[in-house]
Length: 537
Image (cartoon, rainbow, N blue to C red):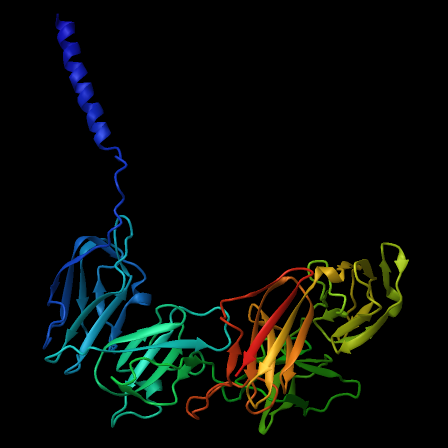
């Protein structure tokens, strides 16, 4: 009987524990897809004659802030950033501590974008704003427009737009030292919108900044500006995009420095036109030196015959700019000789020249140590020709759909420092057949009096370029199957290159016309011909 009672007690208890366990298991109900809702604001939303220094926004559920520094836009901007808490922890409220002095009779907008989201499902509040006015009304004018980045295929989604009121304090240099009256950022890679603006006359700017501070730094930021002033409410919708560009910096010689024994690097800033160095020091008759711009084009490298001197003196010229540089020589180690070819992925375009490039100037070449075969056994007649002071060209009758082997024995190449290649170099490469390539034929309709530079690009890199003075059909043939874009530069000054703009000189960059949308690629497949019609105006 006692055992029976114990069993009766055990069974209901176990059922209770089982049911409790079931209650803790997800029921599979509908997922919460609703964004949080602001239920209270202190002071209230769109408060007039605002005089507080603290704002608290309450929500119907726990929220978190994501990427607040990137997404929160306060317009007009503060000199001292507001303190927004809590960050990193869930809370049912957001607190904004204002640390700056507010302007009189001004409407302020705190645009959080989609930075506020619920804690569980990450449902975002889209374009959430808190607005107040220090005056007795809320400004309600808007300004919409677009931004165009002239050279980049991949656009930013976070361009800064700056609006300055044109009054007695406005001048052209204001963008360098004073924050604007209103700011916003692009909603996507193109479009922007200002809200809650007051009536008046304005100047509009766009900046591409790594860290938005709404001040123009010409060394690091791209800038765009409209030539004309904006009148609100008349010009609430801009029909012309703001064109972003990077200004050329004035040339400034920095210094010369010995990098390795026998190699000096001259650093500079800005645009170089015809940068040259000339040796001023007395040196032996057999002394040699070579100079070349680096690929980054922010320095000039000079290789020279090593000698036992304490220093070398050079004169550096860039157009009318002249500098002298004394370089102390203390390094003991010479750059080891290394070489590379332009073979890519074991293949080479049969219209290209096979090139061998060294990191140091090449002084001597032993042609007898070079050999080449095709189809594994047939010898190929070729010539080794110096194309540049550090580059050799292997010239031969290159055939399509062929397999070549180039062999370079030790000691074949000797550099300026009397160092020779040590190892046997073996290069295996193939050429494709014509059918492996494609072509893009462009029918250019030129509706401008100026010449046009037609460029075919792949990932922002110019693949081919043609200079046109009239409408004509252009064939880009023997192209690798790939994705391409097409653009035309209207060459206003007819110098054959694209010229950027300058804000203080009120010069816009030369116009670039993209074929269709810059998001729409020309997809070229092997053995295809793409016919394209392109109107340039």
